[in-house]
Amino acid sequence: MRKVFIAVIVVVAVALFALDLRQFSIKDFKGEYPLVSLKRFLETEEFVSVEGVVYNVKADKKFLTVEEASTLNLSEDRLVGILAIDIDELSGFDGKNKPALVAVNGIIYDVSNSNLWRGGVHRGRHSAGEELTYDIVKDSPHGIRKLQGFRTYGVLVFTLEQLSKFAQDTKAKPYVAFSGVVYDVKDSPAYNGRNRTFHSFPVGQELTYELSRVENVQASLSKSFPVGLLIFDAQTLSRFDGTQVRVFNEETYKSFIMVAGIVYDVTNVPDWRAELKLEDDAQAGKDYTGQFECELEGSCEHEHADPMVLREFLRVGFGTL
Image (cartoon, rainbow, N blue to C red; front, top):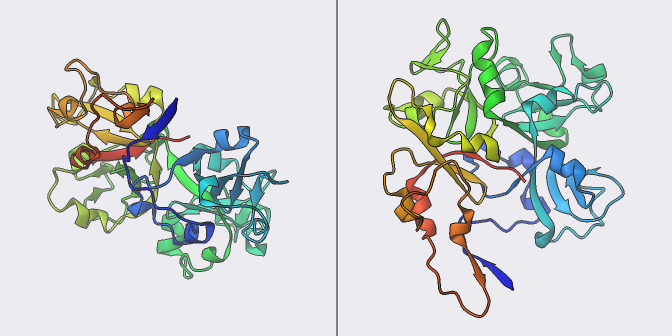
C-alpha cells in the first residue's frame, strides 16, 4: 500500500544553510517545520542536531556544529525539524554538568565557551538555564548582538502546565500565549502589573480566543517580547473538547483540534465538523490530520477536507515529534 499525503501546510524546502536559527523568528513561525522534542531526539539513535536543526543521519556525536556536519549527507529528505527544549528542560542546562544554555527571543544559545559565562553565571547577575529575553534585549547594553555569535541549540517551548506556573508566582515574568507564541508582556501598556493581567485577562494563560476579539491587540503585543512557542501533547489537547476549559468570563467552552502538528481553535466555528468532512458527533480535542491524508491502492474513492479551510481557524499552538 502506498500512502500519499494531501498538502495541509506549505513546507518550505530548505537546505541546512537556509534554516539558520540565528535568523529564525518564532513570532513568524506557522508550523513550517516539525518541532522535535528533546526526549524524542535523545531516544532516536539516527537523529543528530546541527546547531538546533535535526537531521536523520548517522554521526559520531548527537550535537554538531555546521563545520562538523559539513561532510555529512544533509539532503532535504533527511531534514526532520527543529529541536524543541521546554522551559523545565532548559533549567537543567546550567553550565554545571551540562552545557550552559540561555534562551532569548525563543532561540536557545550555547554560551559554554564564553569566559563571561564561566560556571554558568554571567557577571553575577544571570544564570544559564534561564529564559533571558527581557534581561538581554531590554536591559543589556549590548542587546542580543553578542549572543548571536554563539552557536544555536534549539528553540524554547512551553507546555500549558509550565505556562500556568507564571500565573501562580507573583514575582515570575508575565507570560501569555497568543497564536502559538508565548510573550513576555511586561512592557506592554495593556499589562497591569498590580493585578498581573493583560487586557484584563490573567497572565500565565493561553489567550488566543480572548485576545483575538480585543481591538488593537497586535499593537499591544508589538510592545511585548516573544519568548517561546506553546506545545500540546495528546493528553493536553483532549482537555479542549468543548466541555472542560471555559473562555474567561463566558459560558463558552474551548474546542481545539490538531492537524499536521498545528493546534487550531474551533470554538467559534459551528460548522468545523462539516468543513473537515467529519460526522456530526465528532469530538474536539483530537488530531484530525487523517482527514487530509489519502491511502491509495490504485485509486482514491473517499472525500477529503480542503486544506484551505484551516485558514479560517485560529492557531493556538503546535505538536511535537
